[in-house]
Amino acid sequence: GNLIASGSHKGDLFVWTQSGKELFNGNIGRDVTAVKLSIDGRTLWGATSDGQLARWDIPSGKSRVVTDELGYVVSQIYIPSNGRYVLTAGQLKGGPTRDRSRRRYFLLKLFDAQSGELRWQGKVGRDANCMAVSPDWRRVLCGEQNGQVNLWDLVEGREVRRFVGHQAKVMAVQFSPDGRYALSGSNDVWMILWGLPGSIEKSGRREVAIRK
Image (tube, rainbow, N blue to C red):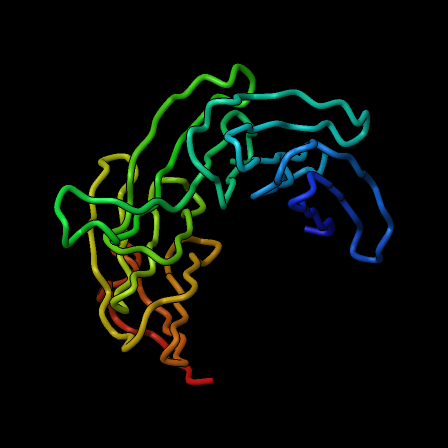
């Protein structure tokens, strides 16, 4: 979009135009860990380190706490185009046995944007370093420490495909706007474009590989 939002550990929140004009500023009084603007630029969402999720109406400057029981540190916020829900994501460590105690996964929580009611939650990733949500909100990409890129089905709560090609941990992943491809970048200095299941005849094929 044409607007830029930011938050700080001092609780400051700002929204600017790309030309540098300030449209909004406020302070939540808590350490801000994630911010997200709605598609129409009228609503700003913010999450804090102590588990609060709040929203601000940009034109009026009014705020409202959606929930103060997130229960974990949120690093990413996703908002659908209809604005009915808000999806939070944060990285956690843990596992049932000693050898899994340092493995990392992402905990996702879906809230009703108006009532703050928790509608769904689930875990994705096996030793995840980064993640992205598909445009239709049905799938999640996880970039793993071992160089794999894993595709998860949010509706069924399961892993549906592993993409193998990187030789070092994956640092960033993203879906294409139409959801047909995935792009991954790794510490091996390669970026790989993947075809996703249901989108091309040979799903999982490396379409393009670029070395920096």
